[in-house]
Amino acid sequence: MTELLKKAKNAYHREGPTGIVNGGLDLLLSTSTSAYCKKKSIEQNWYIKRLNEKGLGTPLNRSILTRKKSSNTVFILGSGSSINRISEEEWDVIDNHDSMGLNRWPIHDFSPTYLVFEIPSLNAGQEIRKQYWELLDMKKRDYEETQLILKDVDRFFHTSSVDAVPDWFTTGIMLSPDIELPPLFGDSRERFRTVLRYLDNQNYLTQDGRINQLFKKRGSVSYTLFLATVLGYDRIVLCGVDMVDSKYFWDERRGQLNEEDIPIPEPNMERNPEEVHKTNDASRQGIPLEQIIYDIDEELLRPNGIELYTETKRSALHPKVPHFEVQ
Image (cartoon, rainbow, N blue to C red; front, side):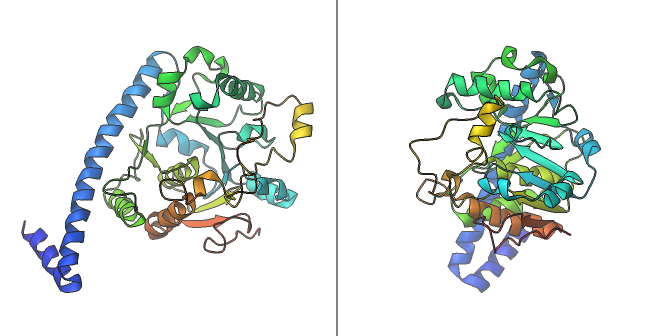
């Protein structure tokens, strides 16, 4: 209590009554975040246990994941069209380091160190889900050395059958207990940054052995930033995280991919491909992904000595996030 009074007094001297109010909100936010994370962690790990009992996968484990680690740099492989502009020289560099492919990355012919994916939502339709499993099954040989990580296990548990999963990776897949960081007391950047500082100060991201919770905020890219932090990477390079439009790397290669019988999503006729990506659309509810990445960088990555780069200058993140120069 004495420590709280001291903090309140200091806040009053710095900012007046507003400082006390903000300090109280921060304390309330931290307490609420702790309770929320514990509740969600229990829920997510319950789903994982049930899926394990049905013969699917193993819990996410840091010790096992780090055995795949061969460098201190990890390349995050998104789906933006700038992927098609990566030179052979750059691919050689990526191949000599670790990499995380996201969601529909298996459409591409590069096999990453890790594949982080979620199954398409029911709103996308059963055919889209079927195509995704077919895509993964086609990559059986190419992905023998790739660690598969399934996120959004609660969605999978409620809307999918283990029988739909290709047999070859039912045992090798890891199940992630990921938690959507909530808009507690208003979905503002200020509150989000407070939550990030709390998670860092409470060592939520320095877990050894089994990982009891990971975090995400509006998109899989944010999840990979938290995962890369837990795995101890010193440098993160975002590839294909464009956000300036809604174009995907497979759109430009549609003819070739169709000839190869690789399942790819049909174009979204309801959205202009020139429009900003939906995760970065400020007109939609929530904090745009671009701002979320800035906040994770400033409140989590930099304080822990982790460097963040973008592979392409076309990204909405550039120049605030520096361009990665191939050495």
